[in-house]
Length: 108
Image (cartoon, rainbow, N blue to C red):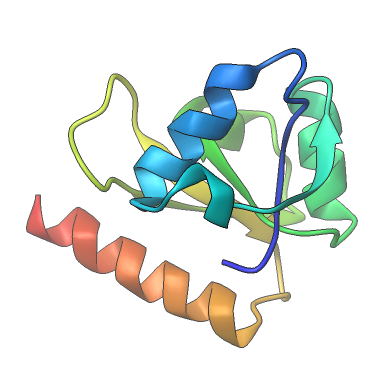
């Protein structure tokens, strides 16, 4: 994944490590192009097309209809995890991540 929207590292340092763990990569490989102070600002960034976000399932209930939520899991987790992205904006790398995510979900 080239870039993601995420929570501000100063406020949520565990989120950055958690995302890297969910994606199965080193934290240094995850690039956050926008850091948000809460879930509503993260949804707004995704809706505006900045980038996608790795979020908990609860986010889909407040995200509105301009985004899509695709559930996936790389390993057992304390909550369902998925990718939140802007509807109609699936670039090649994002589409690959969605396909891989759905494949992982179906094998669990």
